[in-house]
Image (cartoon, rainbow, N blue to C red):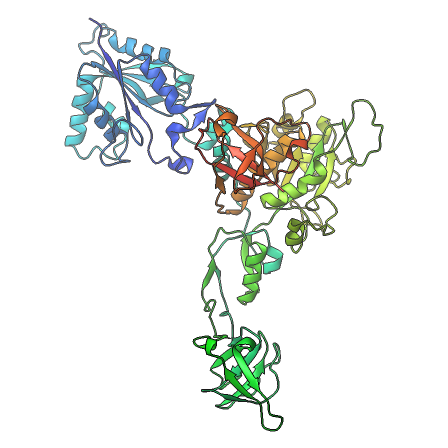
Length: 628
């Protein structure tokens, strides 16, 4: 009679090497690893038990390790199972045939000359390493071994190889199906990653920019590396909150002295029973204990004696004097580390008496276009056959600025620009250094190496230099438009290999914009490769570009989430979608279900992009991203 088979699938622990992500549900090749493993196990076993977060049962205590997990799974596995498949969830290449080979190996009779039949069949990977969490056990032997481990101490925290001590094993070389995925680099090596995981991939693969200390206004767009702590209270001295009268003692008050204006310095005091005119922001004179605005008093003048100031009934309980530290005391934390220093926070830092702040960034970017068919945006008609105008490079600076990059726009133009003013930045949304790289291997090599004039041609003619460049501040990130595909004119990946660059991200499961790439160049600069189609480039810059700034600066960013109607009609299985979003006038958003990527016409009138998760349901939230 054939032995019945059961299976225990361990769904993962804390995922510390993946930044705490739920390993079991990370998709590789478009499918969650847990689904792959459970599917393979179900094809071989009569019953499958999952152990861990979200599983059929849990180890006790939670996160106490694989030995405790196997014990928990065995305790609920039906008693009819004679053989037990023990497998981890992080094997994206596992298939049923691999498990069948392990089951078959354990069913073989004892080897000639041996009086003991193997108690476990253990998989061996392509490098000859034992994979302790890909095995098939004789159930009685596994139960005996677990009992022995538990008698010698708690099963929690024990290495899984402890189960195999003194057991008679048969080893089966299974090769690639034993490959496990423990890091984001291994996820990336398995193919395009989910858009939801791009941030974690970049944080794991990129070194943050070094901290710098600079004046608050020079740091706008950067991210705090330490809490922003007030040096001065706000206000530093007692001041008037309104135009009115500084009052001393109980009223009515005789009006004396000259008007006190902001910036007058330290005024003389006021005596009890007197009042002095005071302007908004002026220092409150010594002796005064209250300020009332003009509309809360009555001033009577008879022409000879000093005028008399009387409080109106509605002034009861009102005091327009701002005491020292009313808004914050010295030592108050205005913002924690990880917060972006926006113009408002830079202004608050000045108000708090801070001459300098410790920050990372802002992340400096230069834009490089590719494609020999691309002509400058202002090229006159008729264009030569097969040539097109650059319709994305001139505006990408604005998209990158919204994502958090410093692209050359001044720090004081943002409010007016958002209000619709032209503020003299020279290009749409913010000036960005740009150049053009020809479709040749030599030009791409020069760009990546940071050679002066790096393939520059057309556009602004600006070369791209490395961080060790001359007088002009060098860029941290090269934003490359195009060359991220795998066609005959795409020289990027071979050039990266020749240069010894490290590819951190190569492809994202999103549409549009899936053909994107992030790499670290030998000189420390980062290359962000965007698709060549205009809409795809904008979508990737607004999403992956934002995640890139987060990774380089340590920025902590709260996503803006919304619910939209009809989401299930535009969601796609196996990939996210980025769609133009327009306000519907009632506080909600309307999404464009169909877009064309060769132009930006479908973005017209859409101030935001909606990030639709893979396979989203009708009630799932979407992230709303300002793209410009």
